[in-house]
Image (tube, rainbow, N blue to C red; front, top):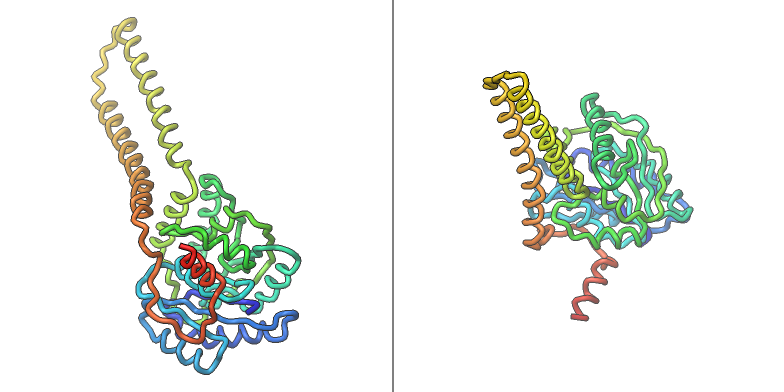
Length: 325
């Protein structure tokens, strides 16, 4: 298989048939592409997404699906798709039609120039203004705080070589942030300008709180700067406290000023208590993540597969390792 298209979906029953049709139209006749597969990954849905995937796989041999048993998250779903992908390249895209299937040939052709990762850059996103502002602020804050650099306006829409797929699958984190993993492995990478589509049906599965949770998870996973921030803040507060003690001493010794200081005392206690709680919260995030990693739980559980899957290179490597042990 030459190309695999990995699409995580949830509650996208109305969008799937349109998406499959547009992918076929975009890929048919692309030179030198000869074979491709479309792998949907889903979990718990409130509509008939699974039934639609079954129907599509029966009528179309290109369509396959993986049904996960629980809500493990979008990035885990993508990893599940990558592990089952038999293609030498893999495209990752959303299933809500905000990633244009017609742009897949652009990614594919750019990769043939010798890159391992090619990602799409959306010059203008068609989200609501508040989400666009959040995206801009998120990228800027993460660029300052994280230890890896993320290109502005980049999205999950990208194509990976088999080498890049294998490197990504070496990461066994419980809460993976794929965008940062792609940057961390730092294989030859390029970008192409792509269009930003509009969701035809349904609503986004990412609420504002889920976006905040993802931001915190990404920051804790790929940066130690919050821990350094605690140390720096503690040093600054200690210096300010020492300076305040010196000022009070000079007022008492030379100016004979007796300061009652009730207001100052309350402010200082409140301020320092806030810093302590913030510090404990940051430490708790790192400690909690460490605790979850040490459990070594399976990343996901497959309830069933739909369609005719070939043995993927990842499965072959796993079988070879099992025989070797």
